Amino acid sequence: AQSVAQPEDQVNVAEGNPLTVKCTYSVSGNPYLFWYVQYPNRGLQFLLKYITGDNLVKGSYGFEAEFNKSQTSFHLKKPSALVSDSALYFCAVRDMNTGGGNKLTFGTGTQLKVEL
Amino acid sequence: DAGITQSPRYKITETGRQVTLMCHQTWSHSYMFWYRQDLGHGLRLIYYSAAADITDKGEVPDGYVVSRSKTENFPLTLESATRSQTSVYFCASSAPGDYEQFFGPGTRLTVL
Image 1 (cartoon, rainbow over the protein chains, first blue to last red):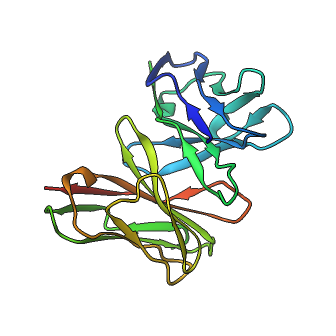
Image 2 (cartoon, rainbow over the protein chains, first blue to last red):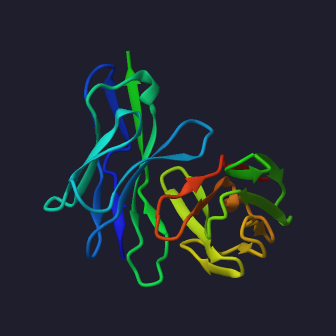
């Protein structure tokens, strides 16, 4: 079965510094990977996805993610963090099983805190 | 309004009562999903539906019932609520082959 792991419950970074939120995956076959963001008392919002092609994927709000097949990772990055980026971030992978349809498996989430 | 909506946004109920959470989407997406979000567990899939009248269990279906008589609606019923079902519930939808899911604002349910 497919899975994703987010090894850090919380990441703290100073505003203006680069940020990285880590995600590793385990799937058989080629993975479809996603990042979502959740602001307080809101639903999840799609940030970006990797299905095929360029290993560096660009998404919303200046975020990008790098797909690394050899390390089975899909880390979320941003060159310069903003206080407004503070939120809960989820990595997800598509269910690759036959009949999995559009199901996604989510990680446990990483709380990003950007401080002045 | 276009999009995906959930009602109610907040609900307090008592153990043993039946509760129905509503989900409505205006995109005519064929896929719809129900998740619960709990600290330390992330999002866990309760039930999903590939189309009207087609539903299937997810990771944590026990104690829940779903139906989907119309494409746009996907209600989730707790037949006899328990305290362990206190959680935030999210509905989502997606189009076939697109995999990106669109989420509703959530329902915060408290079972006393």
